[in-house]
Image (tube, rainbow, N blue to C red; front, side, top):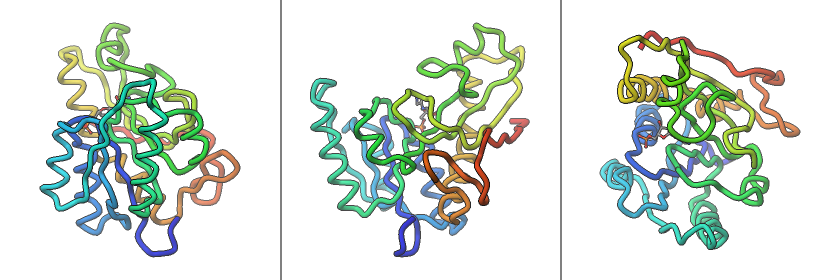
Amino acid sequence: MSTRGALRLGILISGRGSNMTAIAQACRSGRLGAEVALVLSEQPAAAGLESARGFGLPARAIPWPGAALRTQFEQDAASALDAAGVDLIVLAGFMRILSAEFVTARAGRILNIHPSLLPKFPGLHTHRRVLEAGERSHGATVHYVTPELDGGPRVLQSRIAVRSADSEASLSARVQATEHIIYPKVIGWCAEGRLEWREGNPWLDGVPLMAPMIEEFDA
Ligand code: GAR
């Protein structure tokens, strides 16, 4: 964590940016001892970039150059994040896979939110797959990013009951509403020094976090 005061966040988005907005609002309200130092997207047309600028946040696009040039993108992104003095990289609907080199060099300094109860349903289309599998519960997971896709140590999960009337759209909306609560909460733990990365594992309140914390929602 930074010794300059508030934890400085670099938020990476690809689309709407509703998690980014929830985090920015929590920072602005003083509920979170952190500040958004940079919002970055690989999609110049991402709606979240406009929202961020409307919020008065520094926001910029580094257009995705194609998978073959991912290293170039990562170098440009790293320069921008470093120049902004970012302590913690927050993936919030960022739909690209970062290289093992990028992630490993920043171990314990990248968080992600994923719309499922990991380790169930890594990857895409989680809400549809949850319905197809007949799952009774669903949710979202905040986890540290490691080279294994959606496989890094889990910190906090939101859990909701799947309803018989649920559609992909309703599940997505209900899970996202919980994301907007649990993501700022975990970042707050980082800002307060309660959540730390020690020797490749998350520690919460001075003890190793062996399993994710779970918050139940009736959303
Ligand atoms: C969120 O639901 C997030 O969990 C998901 O994208 C959405 C972004 O919404 N992330 C992933 O699927 C990552 N694999 P937002 O842009 O409104 O925050």
